[in-house]
Image (tube, rainbow, N blue to C red; front, side, top):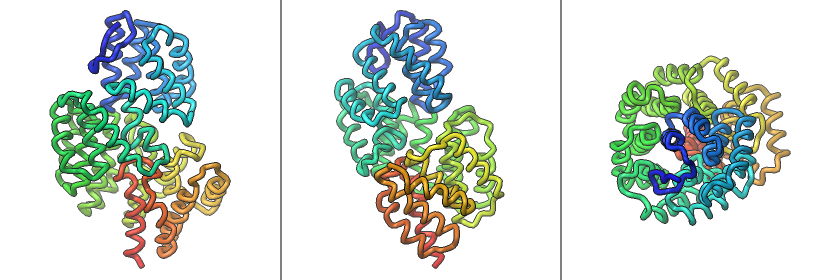
Length: 398
């Protein structure tokens, strides 16, 4: 039995398996890498390491295939009897998450009450892509902050993950001054994608666009050159460029993002490209229609089903630029869905369609509810702001 950097018991008898587990976990939390190769090395050294099988299942959902996720989940369940209570709780949670069970959030919150230093489950719950953000609770940003304050006494000031996560949540709640020291101290300790991302948000939200671009490009061309997260930070670079009216550079960044060969999270590829193409629409930046078709095809292949609000928000942007057949088909799916909040999605879709068709007064009206309830879609403030920016652009065109 070993203990990790947060004094959590880890059930393995292999020193090398434990070390690869720590490496994989550091990459998972740092967002530079999916950690899969290190986790695989860990289970090769300890074929009964249940927690690592569960983490592999979780990562495969995002970076690999559902088939492999199911395979690893079965192995985690098979070997979990030799695991600690905490590890068994994580395995149960990941089982629910992989299977899309709505009880995941409540189970995760109970786990945090019992194990407040467990960064694995905290990372599942918190932030713009956490279980809370996609729960449909419009107050999820404040709840994130409440949880951080509740567990803060369990973390040391030099804990980079807690510092950068706390800073990000403060930023999302518009507490920028409180976030600065935490974001900068985390960066001094660990110059990974997660910490770089928090500082990037801080630069943007405090209107330091030149500084933000400088930071992103310096990181992307050095430490973050091989990071899985460099794609997303390049999207942030484009947003800063838009604020600085550097439209030619926005075009070039869009081209790079669309044609990237780098491994990136499919949801990031979807969101970054869809929203940046929509920004090109509302800023009259002429881009090839083939780019819209490429992203439309990607969405259909990678996310064929509606029902994930954050994904659907971006699906709507791209489909709004397509023909009536594609539009009508998606509208029909939205109206026939079992989503109790589909009214926000249909309003949003009609708002995007009306804007694209230059019916700006209609667009403004359709976007009233989505703007007022944008937390419903999940993701960060910066990602959701595109809805209000679309409405404001329509207002300026009347």
